[in-house]
Amino acid sequence: MKYRHDTVQSAEYLRLAVKRMAQQAAGLHPASYAIWYEYVAGINPDLRSAIDAYLQRGERLDDQTTYALYAKYVSALDAQTAQRIGDSVTQLVDQVSASAVEAGNQASRFGDSLERWSGELLEPPGPRSQFSLGVEDILRGTREMQSAITTLQERLEQSTREAQQLRNDVARAREEALLDPLTGLTNRRGFDLAIAAAAKEVEAGATPGPCLLMIDLDSFKRLNDTYGHPFGDRVLIKVAEILRANVKGKDTAARYGGEEFAVLLPQTPRGGAVGLAEALRAMVASSRVRQNGKNETWVGNFTVSIGVADLVPGESAADLVARADRALYTAKTQGRNRVQLATRPTPVPTTD
Picture (cartoon, rainbow, N blue to C red):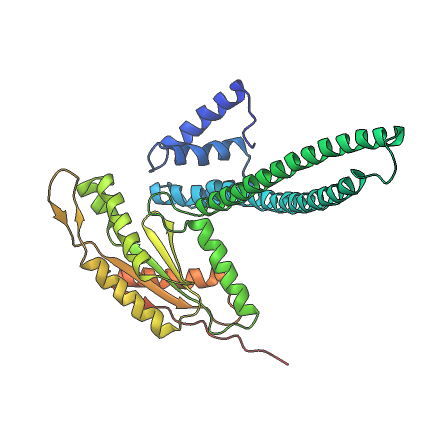
């Protein structure tokens, strides 16, 4: 557990964190408190470096930046820890299950052997003697042992079933740790894992390289200011529904942060990626969202801008994201509600 501060120390960190929060443009919500608590406590060096970079540029953290920092440096670490624990528990469960099955098999074989031995001893060749009485005692003990073995086998079988249920629970918990709670899409941590895996496949010789769509809701702040944040959440959910309905198979649709989404297409060429981006843009532009749950007022006219990029040989996953993001910014500056294909980087000449 990373929070080990006593009451006096945590109260001081509270005072310092609230002071920092009041200087920013973000709301005073739990995500904001979490990043500033870890910042003033000095327990998250990567987060501190990222925040310092903003402060040195004279920037104030808004909600979007705050949530992005929280997702990357606070909640992502929790998901990472959950995954490591899940892997360890799954390995342990596998070992226990295998041992339980083997022990059960051995118990069954031993029981069969005892049963055959009992049958032979029940009919001794000579007259009843002290030896026979001793054999009867052995047989009585043998039957009691058989009964105990049967009980043990039943318990092992029950333990095996419980181990399988635990394995399923761990797998479900690990999956939920990679999901965005509002939209149900893959979260930022899950996206990072997916794009890293796709980049490794390219390094291993898989072709073509993945394409990436970076998607951002246009004028989202104005939507929130006009209709309220609950409506803004419903718009995010609507966009997520459109992505989920049109992104299938090995492709990954993720909520990248705030009102920004990402779609990773591991086996789609540039032309197909642009075609999908145009289709998604058109579907969002034609969709409507109910203003609230008490009337039939529907609101439309919200749009997305999309940047598209394909991974080129020698390019990192981070560079691919950066190029797609720059294309998205270009789409924004050129009028919004449009798709922009990123230019490929100029190859660096090699020297012999």
